[in-house]
Image (tube, rainbow, N blue to C red; front, top):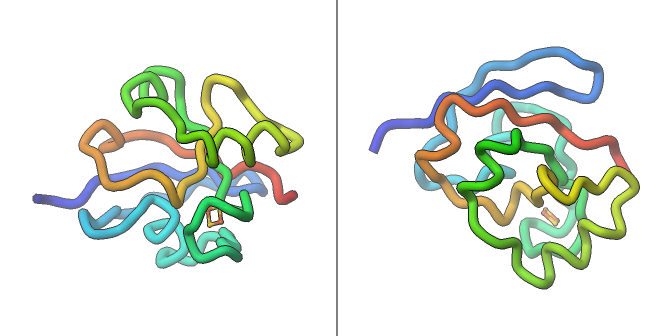
Length: 107
Ligand code: FES
């Protein structure tokens, strides 16, 4: 499987282009490309420091958020009912090839 290409907007509004490898979660792809994603829980859906926003068209293809994920997200200051995801809970998906991902503000 080939890599996904992503556009990422960081918290300063700068644009980054990166490749997301099939064996990575989205959080790992962001972190491994030096974006400031703290991921302090290591990807177990318990810190929300990997919060990102995705576009509605993409969001709709990703399936339901788990109860744990949603519980953390609704507590986040900038929670978006349509768009907020924990990037550690997103496995590689072709639906995200070419997508734009925005880093949510730090909690
Ligand atoms: S890395 Fe902690 S919730 Fe995603």
